[in-house]
Length: 198
Image 1 (cartoon, one colour):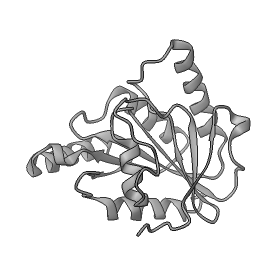
Image 2: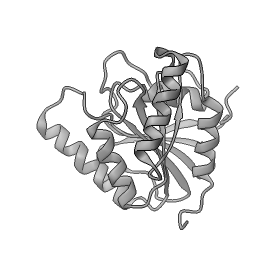
Image 3: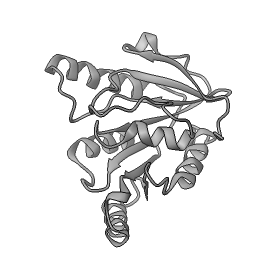
Image 4: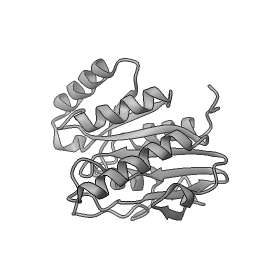
C-alpha cells in the first residue's frame, strides 16, 4: 500500500504561467534521462506507473506536478543530458528549469537522481551548483545499485559523499530490489515538512 494514498497527477507545464499555484511545499526530482528517475519516483511513492517509465530516455519533457498530500507536491523535472532533441528545445528546457528554480517559494528540496555506475556527471554538477546558489537542500539517490557488487556500491557512496562534502546528502538506491526506499521516503517527508525559511 502506498504511503501516499492521496497521491495523484495534477498537471504538466511547458511554461511558467502553467505551473500550479505556488503554495504549500514541493520537492523537485531531477536527473539525467537514463538515470532511472521515473522508476525511483514510483518506488518512493509505492505506486506502479505513477510516473511513466520508458525504455527510451528523455520521455519526461514537461514539468510534471503530482499531489502527495494536502499542500504537498512532488515535481518531476525534464531529464537532461541524453534526450535527442533540437538545440532550440534544449534551450527552452534550460530556461524553463531556471524559471522554475528561481520562482518557486514552495520548493523545499531537490532529489538528484544519479546512476551509481556513472557517478556525478557535468550535468549533475550544474544542477548541484544551481541548488547551492539558491540554498536548496539536495539529496542524491545513487540508483541502479543492484548493477554493482555490494562492496563496489558502498565504495561509490563513500566517494560521492567525499566529493560532495556538505553540498548534499547521499544514499544508494535500487528500484529493482527496493534498496533504500525507506531512507529515500524519509528524506522526502523531511523536505516536505521543512520550513522553507531555514
